Image 1 (cartoon, one colour):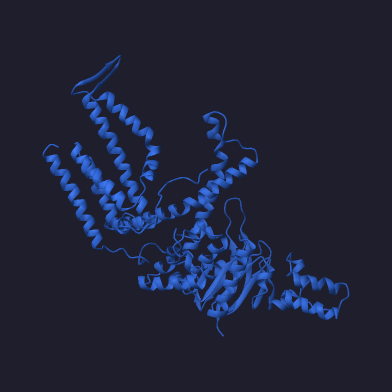
Image 2: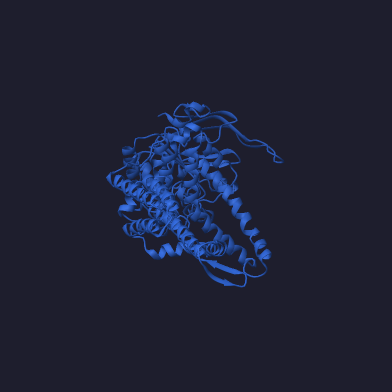
Length: 281
Length: 268
């Protein structure tokens, strides 16, 4: 299958400004995101994961190498709108990405910019709001909603562009556990039911567990790349990079260290409980 | 403490006044203001007042919220009244005491000036009470769009306005948080001289500005990610359309203006 996003020898350096020295973030990074996949990108602070995400829809342009979105080079200014309409982007703070003071007007913002006819905007807005389960709130003021609801509005705002891929840059970092759950459930549903490619950048290992593929970034490079099972069983590697592992993996890892013959690739609490039950019987 | 700011307050509703096209309402406000400034006598003021009260009733706007909105203007109104009362001479001398003189003309001008200011403010309130901020900026953008030919950045101005309106509650909330945070560290905003209190505002304003700039930066990126590229080729979710009620409204506005002009012609 063709990758929807592809980086070829991507290098990026934040330019020097004032007293700050130039800051290289990554060098010769090669990465492919397959269409329809659900990829989680994890890594400690400052490992370049947000910077990488911003390359996916030409918010930042590479200092070396190329980024291709469906074969289109992000450095080509003529293709800018074509690229951005395919790759939707959701950021950390929902307050700073909501433009209008009525929910439906905000969701309509992207199709309005794309010059979609009014009747079709209406249709897209309603559809997007129903998808994220916020249709009843279409005439509300966004500042009166909860964090999780606001973030779902932001997702709906991106969905109204009919993108093929959504990149979410730590969308749950500012939310309470309930809001986090709402958002992750919404993202997962989009991927499973509508086949939209999802790239989820996150701090929470438990959110990465639901992905098809986990990429671990460390100091601008890729430390590990594979299915959640493969990646999270490398407990020592992750710990060295200053990362946590999911609680289930950690429990099994500790058991094994004390001499219990358990596999450590159980990811969900149910699986983990099963493994322990088997051990006890 | 900042929660009860009434800037650009809007009472949602489905009355005739609410359903009017925002452009109609903006134009009617202009007609109303012109009529108010042409009015010279009890009769013409009465005519404009009937219009004002009529629209208020039609829009089901509680009179209480009108008077509440007038409160911040009180000092200005009193000042105007006093100034006109003592400095207009003519007609009969009503009171002469020490250095104060009150003439009948002064009394009349003061009365009409106060009435005019209050009606002016109430008229603009009617517009903001019955029109959502988005509809208002939208209407303004469309009304001013001919100015685009003169390179006036109409779309950009309208966008700035609607974003400003969108961020008022967010920034108020943030200010409240900063005030609480500074109070928790022992900041004192309530006592001391005026200068001291003004100085105490600095630790509120600095973090507020820093965060506003950061928000602006993030919002700009988010807007670009959603394909924003200026007003060119932009469509709208809700298209403004003039309906038959707008025609009726224009007719009523025309009658008001004509009535005031005719009354003025006859010296009333």
